[in-house]
Image (cartoon, rainbow, N blue to C red; front, side, top):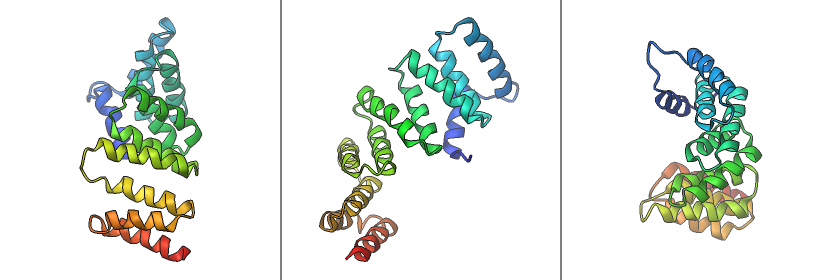
Length: 190
């Protein structure tokens, strides 16, 4: 399974990867730590990150889930668990993480954008639209073409071409590729 390079890079930054300290050593040390301290949420989180850096995704998910179970208010653990599930196309499993993340970080536009993406992949288009709208609102006047485009696609999928066209009008001068893609969808349906 291919994970995004950005996620792997973030994992390395969070772990503090150095040439003298490998993720495999981290995994050994952290497994020993969680055996001694089975309620240590931070240790499970770091273990999950170490597993991710070694592309051991199932183990990473288990450790991240344990971290979230122990500390459901850990925004970093919720985010990485949600992203990992999303990257693995486990959208139903990603949904609770992003829902919780929007509660914990109600001013984080990325949390709402990711929640919208999960809803889109679950084909829950009606729920995706308010998530994207909230992401746009939180950008405070800055363009958020990706969210506007996604709203247009959601309207298209809901059979609402007029609403989709409104979204097209919002993005047509900001991103030709996305605008063209949305317009082709709208015109194909008509």
